[in-house]
Image (cartoon, rainbow, N blue to C red; front, top):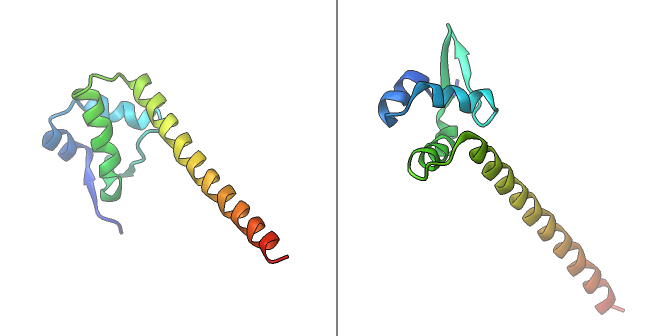
Length: 100
């Protein structure tokens, strides 16, 4: 089983509102495991949780803003990957023509 931390522990450690955590889960920004009616966040997802928490509490970004930022960052990551793939294909094509 992966290491995880309960929602209640996170709320205490990060001094956040439990409703904020629940809203992140409700809109799909966080994935949790539930066991015996206790919600757990996997340790591997802590950086994502911390990023949303910092944006919300330090930068005062509301939940819809977090959703938009998260979606835009995901799209940028996808576009970078697609650009890298296209550059690799272009390089391969150039290599073929140089051999002629």
